[in-house]
Length: 167
Image (cartoon, rainbow, N blue to C red):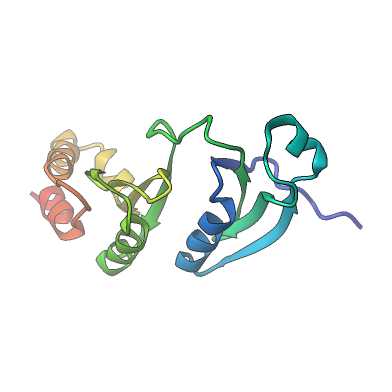
């Protein structure tokens, strides 16, 4: 019997670091694993000079979500237009993901819970309560939370958000 394919899978285009990035990400998230790895064949080598037997794709899972990392060459770069949200239950969990994913990343791209990792991929490391707080029907509460968050220069401080929410 054939395995059911996930309907939507995120594909991440790297220059040559697909396997390294997949190993990095799976080392951070607990429920994660690397799956099938494919390699370029002779045809691709002849088209644009990518070495035969170079890793082409790496399938991997983070917390059960499937991804594909592709070594596609230097033509395309990641931008902040796409980011991955990591919802955290506690400050300890938020600090863990922030520390791991920001290691070696672009420090200038760290603001209000957003960071860019060493591969250029953007992440939002946020408390899982944030969306509830900023969408609270009491606009004064939600605006206090938003104002407090926008003043955070790097990672989010959950205690400060909760204090702003409570007034």
